[in-house]
Image (cartoon, rainbow, N blue to C red; front, top):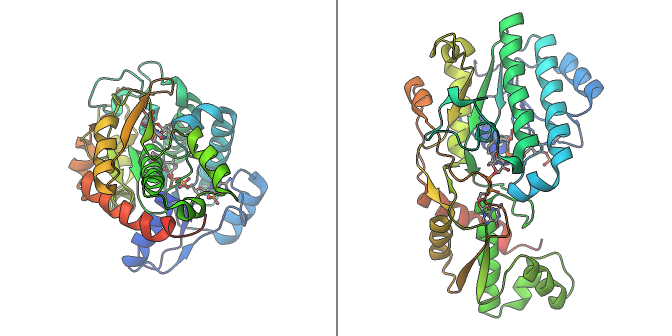
Length: 354
Ligand SMILES: NC(=O)C1=CN([C@@H]2O[C@H](COP(=O)(O)OP(=O)(O)OC[C@H]3O[C@@H](n4cnc5c(N)ncnc54)[C@H](OP(=O)(O)O)[C@@H]3O)[C@@H](O)[C@H]2O)C=CC1
Ligand SMILES: C[C@H]1O[C@H](OP(=O)(O)OP(=O)(O)OC[C@H]2O[C@@H](n3cnc4c(=O)[nH]c(N)nc43)[C@H](O)[C@@H]2O)[C@@H](O)[C@@H](O)C1=O
């Protein structure tokens, strides 16, 4: 991938896409194409076909998807399967038709069985049943992996599938209903702290409500009060969290240095691993995570675990030995990343009107 190569980042305003854009720019890439969702709806086959035949990108980072946390996945099941299948089918197929040299497809570690052996290796794909809360999303992601594999084997393309663990970082989604756990807990605890300090004007600024009564009623739906914050589930599930800029770094590293055949040849033909895990290889319970965030923010109230909300997969530690062997390792440890994200949130979101 030379510095003037034409590179398309699909989803460049999202958590990962924005970090990939930043990384490529910092490395001196000058010919990057981006389109917002409203400029190019990737679920629309005709528009995607026109875009690819006009722009002819040489490299594609496929970081556009319908994404969300556990409740969002469980609630908007039809949207998760439909939109993800459409986006990835359109982008992968038109990348093939337009002779894209290399494409990177972002899947997710939720593709693995819910009770997969720990740490989860690439070869555990399709060995048992999936976690039900995110089954539609996972099935779409598995279809994406198999689409890349099939195009590589039949058409000789160079399409690589990476499976990120749970990600967090700047430009994340902080919506209380649809976000992932880290942005949700950061926002919940800041709001509870503002309530505790009786900074009601600031609470109002940080919700989309007109009166403080409406704002308080809304916050109570999410278990946010001056005395306590609700944490979904039992607190016992464990997750491996990766800083989004580390994820972007891994994506750029693979696009610069590795090909599909490097991954394919890592295993026996019988195992036919065609994708690669990206994470830290370390996990933490949601309870420990919540306590760490509480400490960073300085919230003095209680954490209340609501076991009526889903836990999801209990353990999702991934084996990262393959990506490590290929020459990449994460850089930012969780506590450092949480502090950085909290600082960013305070400047970019907490003191701005929603
Ligand atoms: N966040 C995480 O923890 C994890 C993410 N992943 C995967 O990483 C990738 C990136 O995720 P992340 O950055 O978190 O997601 P975000 O939700 O932050 O960003 C997704 C991007 O895709 C764009 N997009 C969505 N639908 C369309 C569409 N129909 N047409 C055009 N653009 C669209 C969005 O644009 P707009 O905002 O304008 O809608 C946005 O820029 C995804 O494939 C996701 O599945 C994998 C594991 C964990
Ligand atoms: C990346 C991954 O993201 C999703 O899966 P998930 O790992 O379950 O992600 P999550 O961040 O939403 O939750 C992690 C854990 O945290 C608990 N939890 C506590 N309190 C809150 C809370 O307030 N919000 C959220 N979202 N979770 C909370 C929550 O109950 C769960 O036990 C997939 O659907 C799938 O899309 C996917 O690939």
